Image 1 (cartoon, rainbow, N blue to C red):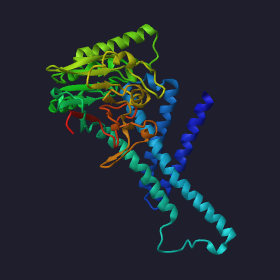
Image 2: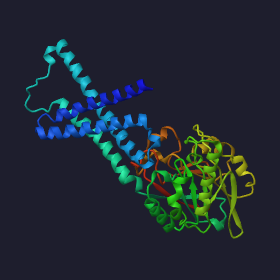
Image 3: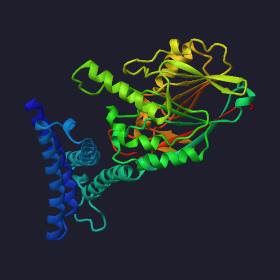
Length: 415
């Protein structure tokens, strides 16, 4: 353990020393005072980062106050990643210079003229590019922490369901997902979200899991906020992989079970109807459709608590079936294969990785290489899946490009 820790510290310092060469290059013609200031800031941050690792070795991050841990680690890890990105450009320059140096011995006449008066030296240009390529993502990460993570977007879509009873034509559903209470110190973000939800005047509201990061106590300061969500046909919810406390070291299975029971009680206190491998009938006049909700079921290594067979049983005669299932990988792995009568599935889980690019006609995130269905609407034949990008965040306390989402889905039986 000690040896591995020393190796990690050594690698981090080597990256810092290497990236620092680009800063020294740009400081060549600077005043002594400016050089001293920049060098002090750079190495002060590096020493701070190493000190955090040393503290973690004695007092692990998981025992820190969760909010301090989230933001401190995000700053430090973000800086390291950006230095690595910048170092790639320095490495490219070093390779080029090595080749040119070797070329002076093989073909002496090819040696560059260092006295040329009109050209910027390549090392200075590469150093500028290295710092630029490191600064842009780091500034983006900082912006995402203070702005992007709270910039809620409303996504609207209309789905055509031929078998939808006339009474349900125009039914408005708001979906939210992945709240992750433990990542927030105040309810301000969610107060804003609830106002936006109620402004849409939905008939139904669906919450598709991950209310917390780890434990039920994270919800305590948000009860008054989530209880304000209004929908005449009800608010329905299900559980996500983080809701079970699987990522916590519990003293006993009884303690873990008590935590889960407490979380389920929170849904009830909010006025949410938690669906646990079961279905309910949604009724308007004499017409009915089925709403199915299962516990977490994923095809990517997460514990499977969901039982769709049990929840689906008894819904055979409903003309339309809607499904709440936290993990979108469930759709291809089981729903499409065995339940072609489920018209629309609602999922979350991926967060769009909280990082990516979304512009009209194009969207990309690294998470798409893990989850085929990762954000927005998907269709297979007459079956639909909508993957909500999430309302909160976890790990990195912000969002870049993939912003928090409130989904508005309107159902129609008219093309």
